[in-house]
Length: 95
Image (cartoon, rainbow, N blue to C red; front, side, top):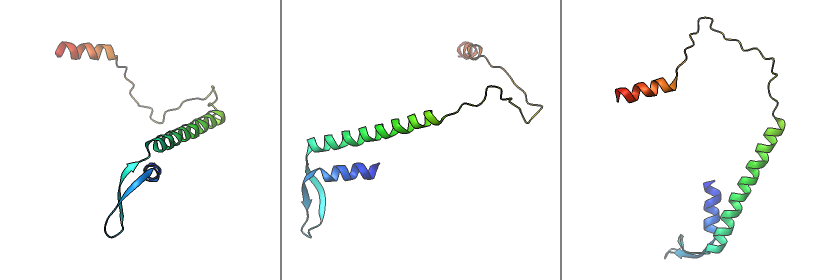
């Protein structure tokens, strides 16, 4: 991600700062229209790829059979029901 966006930003530079040794430094002027088009193209491309793979995953998904038995390994498991409304009322009253 950062490499692609960094390359895009660098490729839209019109005027680079070049020091006395001839080493390229920071960009002084960017082509804003070109940068906007490239960033939108990158975003749209990523969105299309994401939609393709999500659609592919939905196409390949097979739900488990409805007659599947659920088994627990621990026989002495304790199940407790907690009502959120009661806990919330207790917190408000204690407040």
